[in-house]
Each structure stands twice: as structure tokens, then as C-alpha cells.
Image (cartoon, rainbow over all chains, first blue to last red; front, side, top):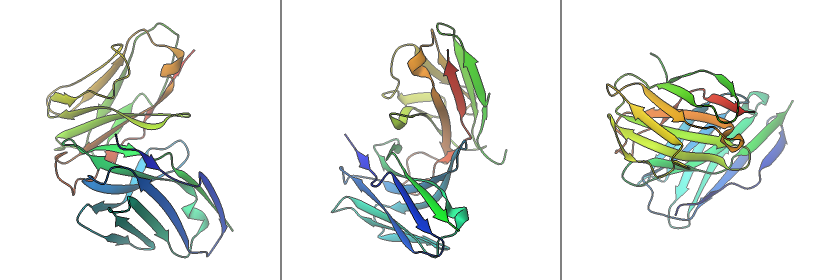
Length: 112
Length: 116
């Protein structure tokens, strides 16, 4: 059974810092690894999807990497801004139906 | 529509009542998923639809939970004889095929269910 872990549960940084959010998973037989953002009281917004055959994906100030052999993914946020404050969830897609197994998320606070 | 929509956005019910939650996926998406997000458990998979059939119901927590999808589009999640532990946010997602590694799942805003 796939298990996804995100540590720490919360992170507070000053504006402008580059930061790395970690995600680990137990079953390397994944289809893809997805990172989502969730704002309070809202649904999930997809940030990046890394296919199992890929090593990384980039979108603007975000870069996500995937190391299947070690069961790890990282989300790198460059030059953090207060608007980046949200909960970031990673999810591993497994099985024939691509259902997602989620970590519990990291709540990020970027201080002005 | 432009995205996944869900209704109602909030639902308060009394213990023992039945509730229906609705999801409208992105037009043309054949795959549809229901997840539940609760404080203690995080986000958990409930059920997957491919077209109108549900090949994976493994996440439904009890036989009080059921779901259907009609016309390859709208889906309804029904919870019978609600219990307080059913209180959570129920999220719906859809994707293009559900079988490609490139498929992103797009989520709706969720329905917040409170069982008194």
C-alpha cells in the first residue's frame, strides 16, 4: 500500500527565501507524482506533474524533482512571496486508475 | 464549464439523515474521482469512475456510501444514515482519461459536510 509523507507539517520563512518542500513515498511503482496547492477553504490547484520517466518539471518559480529509486520528490520555490502562503500537497499516482495517494501537506507561511 | 464544479458548497445535516453531493466534471473528461478530506486523515481516495462504470470502489468506507455517474458526466455521491464521523470536505476531481501518466487531476472546490 502506497504511503506518502511530508515533513515538516508547517514552515515559516521570510519573504525572498528560496525553499525546498520534501515528499517521500514508499512504493516506487508510480505513474506520476503531482504537487498541488490548497488555499484555506478552497479546492486543490495543480502545480506540477512529473511522469515516472522524468526527473524534473519547471513552471515559473517552481521546480519539482523526482527520484523514484529513493522514493523522494522535492518542490523548490524560488524567491518566495507572501502570496505563496498556502498548503502544499504531494500525491503519488498508482494503479490502473491513476488514483492519488496524498501526503498530509506542508502549510507554508511567507512573512513579508 | 471551465472547471470542476460541486454542489452544495456546504451541507449541514442531522445524524441519521441521507445526503447527496453532486459533481460536474470538466466536459469531455472520462475519468472522475471522489476524495474525502478530514482533519485527522488528510485526503483519502473514495471511488473512481471511467465513463459510467466504477471499476474501483475500494476507498468507500462503508456500505452507507454509494456513488453513480450518468451520461459519462455528472456524478452523485450518496451517504445514507449519516454519522458524525462522516463530517469532512468531499472533493471531486476529473481527468482526461485516467490511464495516462500525463493525466493531471483537476479538483472542484469541494462540499463541506457537517453532521450534527
